[in-house]
Length: 100
Image 1: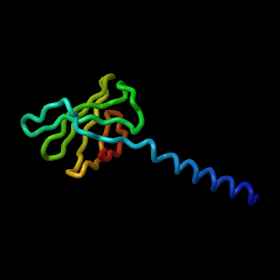
Image 2 (image 1 turned 60 degrees about the vertical axis):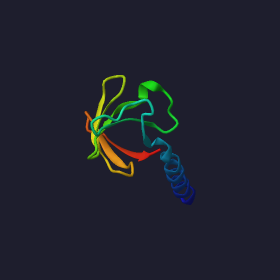
Image 3 (image 1 turned 180 degrees about the horizontal axis):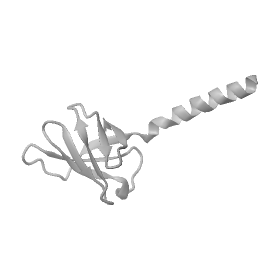
Image 4 (image 1 turned 135 degrees about the horizontal axis):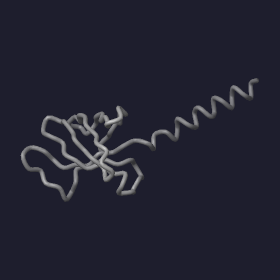
């Protein structure tokens, strides 16, 4: 019984230790424009370099965000001036973002 509890605790700790790699990052698009108070941005999972998984869009001066990926999925939400925020897709899933 003790081995089972220790194994379960080890499994829980190991799975939480690797969960931090699934976070999303936002950065400004180096080739985008910043006309009219909005800036072009892109969001992707950390260490995921597949271009079809990348979201691109705009962030307004008040922090509201609208983004789309290559499949047409949309994200909307807010991001503060430090680059942290939450976005919601059309299915109701929420994504935490952090600056790059």
